Length: 160
Image (cartoon, rainbow, N blue to C red; front, side, top):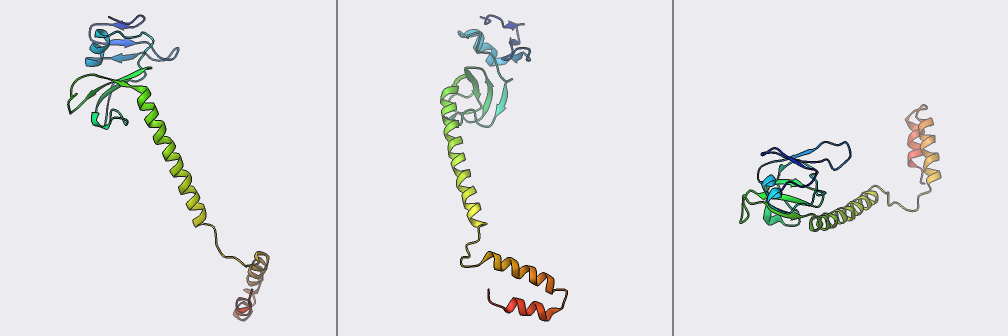
């Protein structure tokens, strides 16, 4: 049965856009057949066209690669291999979202750790040096460089 507000020409099921004035999304092949054969809420509109992906679900790696189309409430997938190869599977967005949010939080923690390590690696750990004295000495060396090597050698040899 064609969901209310959708159209079907016998080979292409057309989902209305998820945003007002946005493009309609075409659904073909086994995904079209699945929707027409099962109760499908009209508001569960397609968000993307069907496409091949390397991993159908990050939360369920056993599904592997396959064809997938994402809808407002769920995803439909058709695995390339394994027990479900060639069959349309109803994929749960909630389970996938929780998994992806966990991965995102882990990645953010790793980024923070790496940023901290990078900042520490670039922070000098020399202690007991008077920064004003160093700045003054560098200025003096720069001025003395116009007077020849002897003056520069004298400033370099002086203790800080």
